Amino acid sequence: MTDQPVDAQRRRFLTGTATVLGGIGAGFTAVPFVASFQPSARAKAIGAPVDVDIGKLEPGQRLIQKWRGKPVWIVRRTPEMLENLKKFEAGVLRDPESDKSIQPGYAKNVWRSEKPEYLVLVGVCTHLGCSPNFVPEPGAPGMGGVWNGGFFCPCHGSKFDLAGRVYMGVPAPMNLEVPPYQFVSDTKLIIGADKEHAA
Image (cartoon, rainbow, N blue to C red; front, side, top):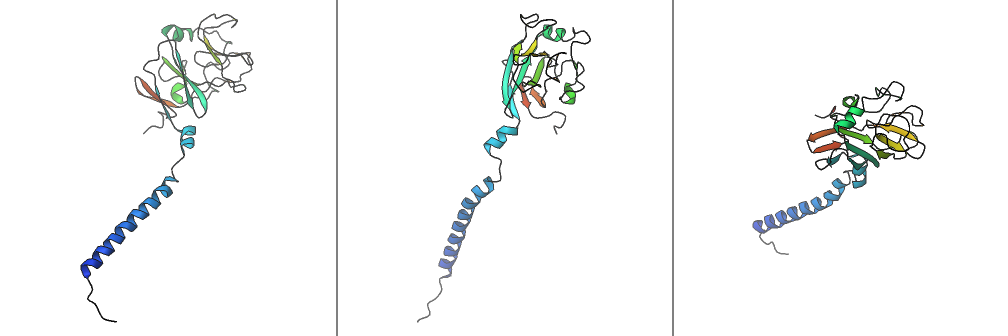
């Protein structure tokens, strides 16, 4: 066996190449591993905030957006609709002040919303979870008694006004839920992002 001189330059090249290739291999191995810590698309869809474009929503119209597997209604109320919310006599609504309702603090008012013009509600009846119909016309046929427009659940006859407040004498025990939301501009809101806790 003969001693051959060591080619230091070649050794450095081979060591550097092996290091680079090893780093690239480690990177390719780490990407799926790190990605597995991220929430899945399904998990994001279940609880993630949802952006809603309300720029084309006309007064008197309702937009439906899915959030956490439930329909969320955004209603752009007309001045007449807002005025009708004040026309209830005592004893017509079960919880007119929304004391027993689920809503953020900024929605505990007669409109049950941050901006009176826009109503944001979870569109699920508080009785058995049906989705009520939107019946905005005052005095609509079949509504009986005082009807200034609102939501009617045909399954068991629960009625709610245009602020989601439940009528007396119907099966639903409480007002429709107002989810957390915040306006980010005049034409966009985010459902699931609570302005009370926004940084």
